Image 1 (cartoon, rainbow, N blue to C red):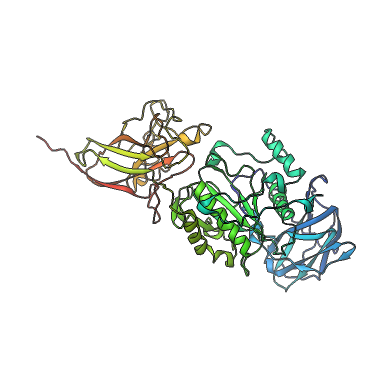
Image 2 (cartoon, rainbow, N blue to C red):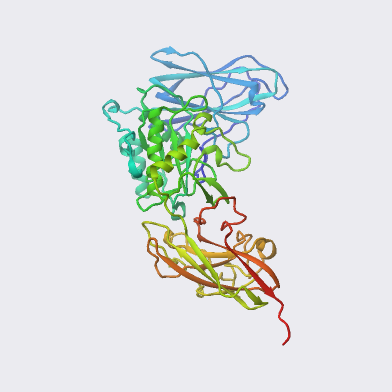
Length: 574
C-alpha cells in the first residue's frame, strides 16, 4: 500500500543508546481513547544485539493492557544494523488467557513509502473474540550486529453491535456485457466512525475527516491494479466487514491518509466492498487512490482480502473479481487483455496488472502474492470475454501535412484530426485562456508551448487546475531529442522537458460531442536544413496523455503516432 498524497507521517522513531536492563513501558504517543484505532510508540532502551555485537538475552515489552479491548493489532518496529539479527513475537490475552507467541514477519504491503531504513511491519492480526492485553518478545537470533530502537503497537476495535444482522450480497451472479455486480456501500460496511469521517470531509473539514481530492486528483482511469491485503486467510464465517474497517482504520488513522487506499475490496465469500469514498464517480472518472506509490493517478485499485503467496483466492472471490473487472472496464471504457501507455510514469503497462508490475525504481513488493499474480493472464482473458467488443480509445485519427518539402524558414502546416473517444462526455479546449490565440499558431523550431513574451508571460500555459478537467485537450507534435537541443532556453522554452513534444495547440472552444471529430491546424518553421520525422499525439494538461494504445514502450510521450517525414532544404539564390 503506497500513496502520493499524504497529510503527514505518524511513525515516530526514537533511537535511545542507553544500556538499562528493563525495557521502558511508557508510550511516547497515544491517540485519543475515543478513536477506534490507537497507536502507541515505545522507545526501546536496551538493544538485543547492539552495533558492537554484544548480545543480550530474551526481553519482553509488556504485558500491556490496551486502553480499550481490540479485535485487531498491528506491529511496526525500527531496527539498526541487520534486521534479521532480532526476532519479535506477539502474544495476546483473550478472556484472561494468553495465546502462544506468534513470530512477526515483515509484510511490505504495510510499509510506508518513505519509512526510515530498517523499518519492519507486520500484518493486521484479526482477533475473534476480542483481546484486552498484549506483549512482545524480543529475541536475538545470533551475534549479528543489529538492534531494535522502537516499537509501535496499533490496536483497533472495529466491532459493531448489529454485525450479525447485516446481509451481505455477493458479486457472484453472472453479469453479461459487464453489468454492475452487487457492491456493499460504505454506509453499510462502515460504522459510526466511518460515517462521521465522511460527513466531516463533505463539510470541508480536515481534522478527523475523509480526504477529499482536488480537481487535479481526478482523472479518467486507464488501468486496473490488483492487490492482496496481506492479512490472514480465515474461514467463511470470519467477520469480513470488521476486517475492512480494520484496513480503513489503519490506512485512515494510523497512516494518516484520510481514507482507505483501495477503490474496492473482495472477501473470500465473493462479497465486493466499496473502498475509497466516492472513489469511482458517475461522470466516468476516478479519484486518486492510495494503493500504488507513483501509480495512483488514473488507476483503480482492487484488493483481495487475504494473503495469496501460497494459496489461490477462493472460487467465489475469483468470480466476484472477474465480474467487477468486467463492469469497470465496460463502464470506464478500459480495453481488456491489452496494454496502454501510462503517461504519469512514461511506461506502457497491461491494462490489468498486479501491484508488483507497477513499481518505481528501488521499490519492490510481492503483492498480490505469487498465486494470485499467476492468475492474471486468465483474468485478462476472462475480462476480454466478459466485456465483449473492446471500447475505443482512439483519440488521434489522422494527420495531414500540407507540404512535406519546404525551404528553411517556410512554415510546415499540420492538420490533425482528433476524435472524442469518451462515450459520455463532450470535450473542448475552452479551459485554456491564452494571451494570444493558438489557433493556427506557427512555432519557430526552437520554441515550445511554454514560450514567454517580453514581459515573461507564457504564451500557451497549462490550464488552471481548478478548471473543468474534461476541457484541457491539446494536440501536440515533436521530434526525437528536441529537448536535448532546445529545452531550458530563456524565453523560447523555459522548461526542463516537453517530453519531446514541444509544439501544442488546443482543440479550440468548439465542443466535440461523444464520438465526434474535429480538425486542429498548426504549424512549425524549421530553421535548420535536414530530414525530420515528426510524431503526434493528444494530451490533457495536469492529467496525462490519453493517446491511442501503444503496443511498445514509447520513445516519447505520444507513442510515435502518425510519423511524418519532412525535408527542409537550404534556400538557394534565384
